[in-house]
Image (cartoon, rainbow, N blue to C red):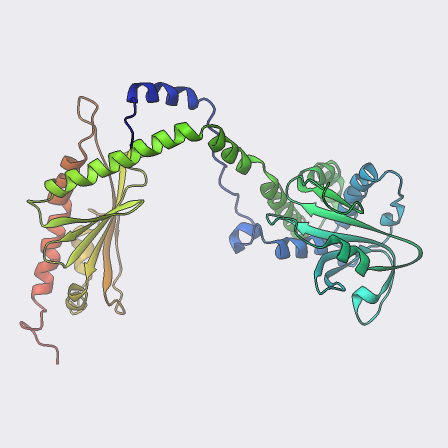
Length: 392
């Protein structure tokens, strides 16, 4: 790394703090976040189909189709969409002439054929749904695959989480994005909510909440910020890497008189191994500089695992160290090469000068908390080694 003027860098950081994008708030738990499907297109398409289908009687089909209609009239004023005021129905995953799949077909009447794409529709909307993926689909194939009666009409919509540029795509498709749809929906939600079944209302609110979460522009703010301030970010990254390297070099020497030796530096952790090759400490450094916080995991290694599983009473660990460490791990009889015994968190304190002595703090932690634990475990294990008490 080239020499960085830390005084200048400090001034630049003070200025950049004013414009750093705020992190996104944690997602409110709902049907989508709990199930782990907040951004899956197929899952969201199923929910759109559920609320668009008039026969489902959810109480929200009318305001959803009305919101779509208002946006379509704005974007294609020369065409009438009054037919959307009638009962509407939905087909999902409709195969096209070329073997592609249309996400949703919204229609009023249909002369059904064995293959949906060969059915005759009176009025139909072809919907391609995009949440995070790029628009690479053959929209001409989608449009040509759907047949309409004489005097009927068909319209294509690319429904997307965020605004999408449509200049390079067929003119018979328009873009409607979540945020403009949500604006129309919220304008109509009050009356529908008053008369809705409470379960359906809960579903619909979760659905809207997830659409809003997927449509946020906050994700792109972080990207734009990094491009704009990339050189400064690289300087800070280089300084951080240099600091971590200095940290590991000093650890190698400071651990020389302890029962541990430095093993390796990972991106977010430091691994220490005991000199007798029985124990490992994994020290998380992800919050080292931001919070002066270290997380610790203590592991038995290889032969020590086998010996420890011979010890019949592991409750003694909880009795003696349950208040010392944040978590004493439960016994796992199936453990082979690795077995975790405790997890913990400790914080580095600054001296009167304001400086933090990482090595001294770590050594104190090892001496006052970890070593007594190791001595206790070794004493327990010594009573059940194969030599002292052979396993028959």
